[in-house]
Image (cartoon, rainbow, N blue to C red):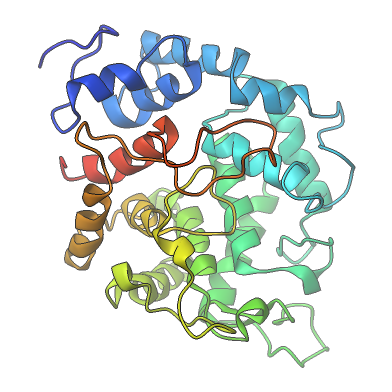
Length: 345
């Protein structure tokens, strides 16, 4: 392999100029993720260790942590769902997608503990209000995934993952109207198979994608039979039909939202097709033949130098600026290359 300008081995499926762009030392956040996820350096590689440290000292991770209260929350204590998109939930989700790790900064551990203390019910549901009635697959999956990615270790996460698995398959979860037990479906998470009150009670592919991403953070050896059963349900729901057409139940709309085809960063509850592919790769299902049309769609969105644009973002609404819409974007490019790199492009 040849060497890039950053001194790292070139990656065969990445345009050399694009690789140099991703590895620019002046932009430590994307450089860190590119070395970790595109070049694929081991976690103890000295260059990756240095890049990870630099990304925590300046750039988006540092900006978000600078805004955090010493007690581990953003804006106000509590479940942290509001206001969007700067309160605790959204800040934690952003940190995870930026590659933040508890080993690099003790404030990240404090943030994880605050979420578990205030947004998780005793029964395993992550909630927008702190009560089981305000749980939903997208929130559950997003927070489980984020805390795992951040490196938070807490036995309460096991309960959250177990609830998520059982709520997907229906095993051991009572019907919504059964008020004799708190282990039941509610107005938001209203039934098995990703059914959601916000989607008119129909299965929600946005929520399913978040749940699958979270389970993908678990090594296969750590997946319980309940989790494995839930993964099978999710994979079949998401890729049992051609995902490029987004043929999922649309609830209150007669057609799928156009947001499916807009690749973005960060990714909160609004979901894009690229994230479905990310979830399948995380689960070890990236070789799934039914993903071929989706991989083709992802490739087609790149420019002539193999860079992807930012098509959906939260400019001015979060703690950091992810880039200009429609312009080539390092964060989105890294997302795409993670998927395509699974099969060498």
